[in-house]
Image (cartoon, rainbow, N blue to C red; front, side, top):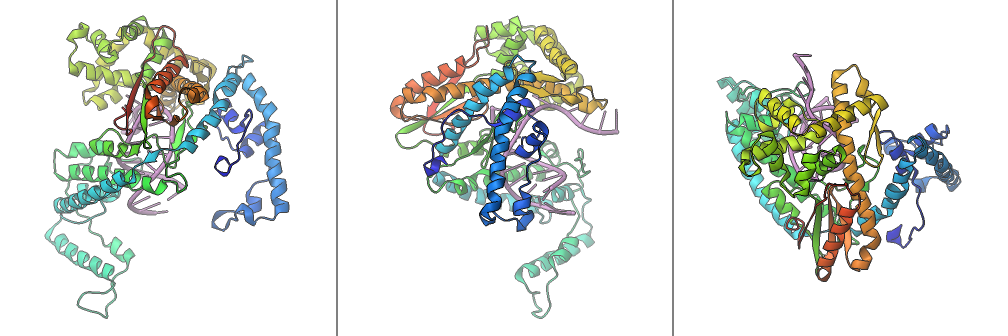
Length: 552
DNA sequence: CATGTCACG
DNA sequence: ACGTACGTGACATGA
């Protein structure tokens, strides 16, 4: 509506967002919420438009039918307001913290997200087109090398076919001959006529795919997927790379193909013709922890880890006369753990502005801070990052590629080093068992009915969620509060500055060059002040450049 | 529409 | 014997 000149004003009560707070994992569809909270079943939209590919669009429905339907939706939403307000109060035992989150965080965030979506982000199409061409050449090169190494052609994008190529037994001479015939049939099919015999019809596609060769390299499979297919994921292929040249080539191909199809070729299609920019949708009611998600396109998973990925991030740029500014919370999950647990040693390390992974390694390996080796730091870093997810010895062993008992020893040492942290995390699981839910620092909730399941896998999963949600969710509360505060006053600091992206622990701004210092100071201050963590300092790292990569 | 894979925090 | 670190979204394949 804003794009068509209609400005929506006033306070918001969003029934969908309210229900997300009441039970984040339930369905938030208006009809479902009305069924549950009003015991009223609205007229299904399918009664007006039908279903499937024959479904009408609303403009094709007689207005005397659309009117009552639309009014019912508005009426139901309005009638839900007092009911959901009461529910928001009640779920918190009358303390009203959930209602407070609704009124002070989620509802005020709605227009902030709308403004960010409207603002969009500029993408340099030329950079992407250039990368795309380089990728085409690289893919062609890899494809040829892959077919050579495999001894035959196959669909590299198909995990099923990769499995056949890697794990089926090697060809006999008969197989080789049959393959040559099949290749010729395939070419005939593509050409539409049989070579050397203009009257003969080529075989059908179905026939050809049934006759496709099935010989392979005879490598040893390393695990199966849920459906029983041999796994061909990154882990398996990098392991198999020690046996044969093909797996590494497939990994290279996959990496390039993934980045090309998902980002390099897709992003230019999404440039809006009116604005020349890319406009994501932020979803406020999807993630059960309280985080946002981003779709169409997802701008929260733009590459950064590999060299090729970095090139893609460079295509996100500022308008002329402006710069991009990225402001990140530094180690925010660990700071939240330190604060919520009250652990004195972890807190002290943050107060002293020590490198938190080095400080932890010093405790775990019982050496001085300065004596910690790079290898020790890297190991403990994995433990530090695994902690908020409820890591197991098995999981840590896989990540570090070390033995199970060695991983267990590392975890035991960590537990002994930070007993208050461990008490806190174990306490979250206890709390979940007793109350059936866990909550963030501010009282955002997630229910965990499986915490008492007799199925050990379900129960273990619920326990990991019990540990993770309060931490990830508190982080989400914090950055949401910061976004609201920043949006409210950014105009006073810089007329031309816009907050344009949020990536969980990072905010990205597009700022007139002259206002960069002022906006950096302002955003950093607001992010730090949004949700104080008591003794634990909050650190925000700010970077500025003409593109998103270099702004980090 | 399910599956497998992989991009991010 | 199984599964194994949380939270997401998008793509290609194939039924």
